[in-house]
Amino acid sequence: MANDKKTVSRPKPQPSLKEELEIERVINFFAMSLLEQSTVDEVLWDVVRNCIARLKFVDCVIYELDKSRNILIQKAAHGPKDSTAGTIYQPIELAVGEGIVGSVAQTGKPERVDNTALDKRYIADDAVRLSEIAVPIWHNGSVWGVIDAEHPRRGFFRPHHLTILTKIAALCAQKIRRVETEQAYQQVQQQLALNNRRIAETKLLALRLQMNPHFIFNSLNAINKFVLENESEQASLYLTKFSKLMRQIMANTANEWVSLNNELAALNLYVELESLRCDHQFNFQLTVSEPLNPDLVRLPPMVTYPYIENAIRHGLLQPNVCKPTLCVNCREQDGYLVIEITDNGIGREASAKAQLRGLTAHKTYGHALTEERLQIVNEVYDVNAGIYFTDLTRPTGEPAGTSVIFTMKLKQP
Image 1 (cartoon, rainbow, N blue to C red):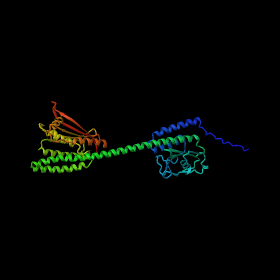
Image 2: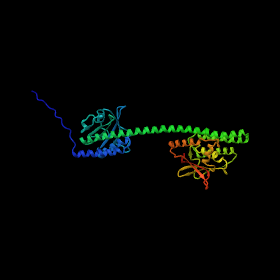
Image 3: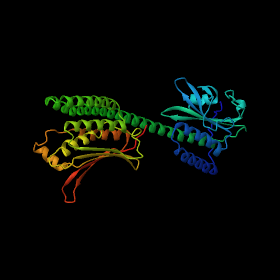
Image 4: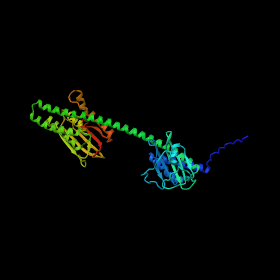
């Protein structure tokens, strides 16, 4: 009767208490260190550096698997051949299945080689080392890459090293997953912001195109008046200034931003036309305070026009206004461009009542358009532009006109 042979399975050696404490300390250190990394490259370089510093390895490399080519590409390395700048200029490439690293990538199982001289798979890099350890990095259910370390002393790597590297690989994969999720979220946010910006810029263009015919319409009314009254010289003078104004408007409204100098040139021409139309019934003062350079400062075109128009038509050209005067002052204040438009007309309340009673035939829509434009400009360019109104009063409490202030962060080319 033949003797039965029983196969006795030997239990895997358990780490000692000292080794367990070392494993816990090392893993905690790696976990805290990886928290500070924000890109995949930073994660990989942090791991290889700390493997050398904390585990006393001589050489540590992380390979990433290029599944399209079935090739492992060296992504980070620390040791005698490392780059202190965090860049590998001539990365090593290994085919899956080639060498110990390639075998780990192929099987997905970690390996610890005590004597590389006896392993035909071993491939020497910059120097022959007698011990090697390699563990896979698992990510989304497949091998993402391999952490590989070598040491010149035979049998240097112990079972607890394999445990540590396997846990480090898991931490690495977890951090890579988090980084990729954050990057995907940021890309979605950037694309959303880009789409919103394009929508806003398209809407801004539409509003600029609305302002252009609105501006032209007001000037054509004045020309029509002279033609109907057979005032040929005035009509000719007006047409000359009007053609110049049209060229300025076309130049300004073709751009999202214009120089303050060009904006004031258009406004000055418009005020001259209005003054001609109403037989010079009001005075006009335009000042640019130092050190503001109107050639360098930029602002949205025609943004102050509706308030000039309102000041003239609904404030100054009304009955019982003594010495009607329109003042425009441009200055710099605390890093902001400030344009103050002041008139000594009948005031906003009296003007609103006059419109309700039908005493004023003309109604402007430029203010609503300008506010919408400024809202979009702020969303797209973050210049904190705004319009602020102040009702001026005399010591007796009677209306003394209106002050309109446009402010915006100084924008220069």
